[in-house]
Image (cartoon, rainbow, N blue to C red):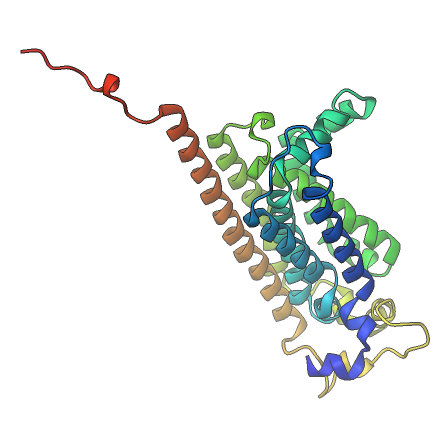
Length: 305
């Protein structure tokens, strides 16, 4: 962290524009669940737990798209993979859990009968969401695609927004924030989570078992300098000492860093999906208890002499 502070200014390290945008989102959220709540049919007070989920979701998105991790992710791919975990495996489920059901239902009601509703129905399919996110994630980490996107800031930003939208679709079917609209039973949701874990494995395996460092962003000084220049204000020189030499930020060689990134992604993904399975199983048990109902005197069989 000391090396980053010495070479980069406040704006490059802390991305205040993203932080400000997320603060605005948080303010709108609290207005929505308090002052504007009565505008929604069937609205009820939002639990404190949901508020915490939403705020931590925004924090995770900030860690994934900004904060010092943004700079560190341009120096080592293991930090880049940590960004991916925060943005698409932590932020999105927390944000969905933090949004009240009456707000989500209002959005569904608004668009389901419109022309765009037919498009959304297709995209909202569990199978489409399954292959869309995992396909985009895997394609992103192909070497030629990764290096191309890292050198094109506009394309990279658009791809990040697309990944975020795809992850929201995927997590929608995992946690089912509106159970009445979920096309999957609880058992199928657990299978769906397992399927997501399987589909992301090839991308992790490619990164882990590659014979050499694959990404020019972290091995070619010219490409690295181009990528880093987008993180700095105009006119500021790229600190090449961070790329190599005794002052280099990287504490692992490029191939070991790449292997660590792949292992980190797989382990953290499995951990998050394990928590998701526990959440679905808890919902399943709660639903079964509600269907069975409490035991009454009439439920007890009578024994006749």
